Image 1 (cartoon, helix red, strand yellow):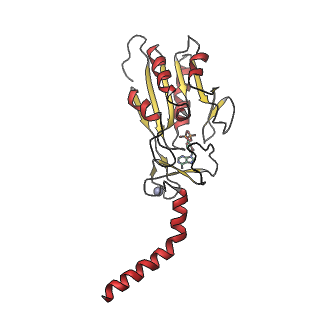
Image 2 (tube, helix red, strand yellow; image 1 turned 90 degrees about the horizontal axis):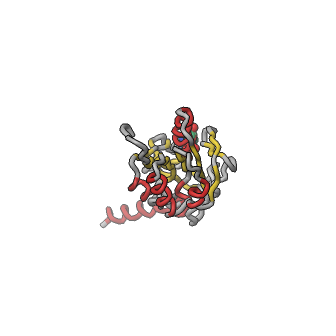
Length: 213
Ligand code: ADP
Ligand code: ZN
């Protein structure tokens, strides 16, 4: 955002898979606002208690204090009127309501910085992030490093078997994967691995048969 006149608010969205540096980027922007002596408030859903109750902590250990909210409307309740910059982490856990809340905040003249996962463990758009992307003034898409091959990673690979959309955790439960190494269904990926040699034998038999005809 280069030219902003008067007290106009706006929405910045930071998306990407897990480990792409969304929390780091949110913390960086909030710290810079603090250095500029702006009043800031930072929120995260209470569901994410990976590291600390009242703190956002990145996977690399950077931290900033935050307020826990159980639903998006709590942000409006906890908002101090003098706050100029509002940071929200893990917004994918706050439901559709977060879209209205961000709109209201921006319309009040606040700078809103929202970070969250844009796709889920199956690689599908993770609501409400796509809606936030649609109404944002500025979008930053970050990539992680694929843990299999080192390429740019756009996906969050779930390593444990579960059909639940939300399984909170990081250590050993998820890793970043590029589009080539991503296996959208961990259960099927496991089956495929188990069936691998048989499939090869079957293929060999089929081609041998074909050659004989
Ligand atoms: P996010 O909020 O997107 O999950 P974080 O900001 O918490 O990401 O963490 C980003 C940091 O995680 C990186 O700076 C790096 O130190 C570390 N990291 C661990 N695994 C990876 C990976 N596969 N790709 C990139 N960074 C990783
Ligand atoms: Zn890869």
